Length: 419
Ligand SMILES: Cc1cc2nc3c(=O)[nH]c(=O)nc-3n(C[C@H](O)[C@H](O)[C@H](O)COP(=O)(O)O)c2cc1C
Figure 1 (cartoon, rainbow, N blue to C red):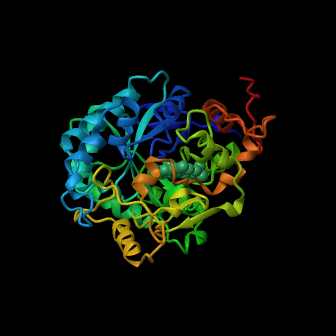
Figure 2: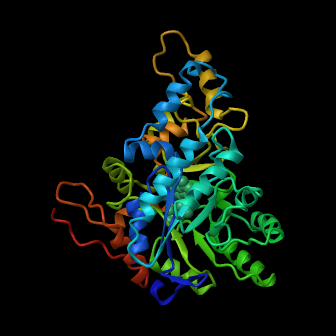
Figure 3: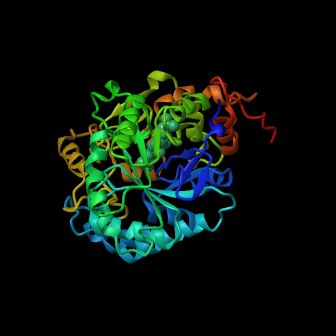
């Protein structure tokens, strides 16, 4: 059996049951998502730090403008003045979505990974703006990620596309699903798909920093599927986290899952937004180079390479320009940690290191936070070492097709690149 024997049915449309998960900030690029779409699957872009991403892609100046507007506050520990301009945010989001959607060429779909934990100083209004502008821009689906909020559906219920856009949620436990569903059923807008993300995924984890190892994706997926059956709810379930081969995927598809969501294997593709040196680092990773830590100010544990530059950060908070993690009071855990480290710094000490928190806004924007899935150390099985000792970056199509057609856990390496 191979993945290609199965299809994902969403509404009236059928897809190859491979979903490339969202990877912020601009690691899952438009180009990566569009490859999944071209090949009949589903690709995600992520709207994490979308104003900054637009500045990089389209030479807009959202970040500079915001930084200038609030420059008077740069030395202030209190960031409660610093808001996003909702007009700018809507414009940036729509531009980014349209830039992707207008280049669709296949039968697949482009979804948006929307991390609700990016509270952006005004969680409700910025989230409403992001989701509405994404629908205005023509996005096919919205995947509500980290920080899933019960009130999110209310925020967009008056949008003309509320019933036509696909809406999915990412959960890591049956309990989280049950809580969300209660509200969704009352609103008569149940999710169109459910991504169940297990403890081996990349990015932020929906488990505790100490106990994530005690959970197992297969068990959670089985619980979710049997709960949905018992409630007569026909919602596709999409497991994510640690699915490394086509045969890993088939195991889930044979057990009632409708598709799989994968990401780590695509981090080293040509289309991934990571810089080349970081892709090489991922490929050279060994199992004990990976850590799950609590430095993210979101409060969620995060998996990353121990060599990530963010783990040595002592930079001044950059909330006037970024500020994506500011909560509704204008606070972010890194700001306090930074000022405490500054006060504790001994005379003559040049490098300031903030150890228990990091500035994720800057870290993700600069590709200094090397977040990764648990299977990153296996990436070297998936491509060729070149004569100069570096690794070849496969095309996204190579990886997508390997998932789609491989059997017996075989991994097909890409043809050697002679460019
Ligand atoms: C580099 C990287 C960045 C990620 N960033 C995000 C993100 O911004 N938002 C999110 O919901 N999930 C994120 N994820 C999780 C993926 O979307 C996906 O669900 C998961 O990693 C799949 O497991 P796998 O990587 O083992 O294939 C990220 C994963 C990786 C590897």
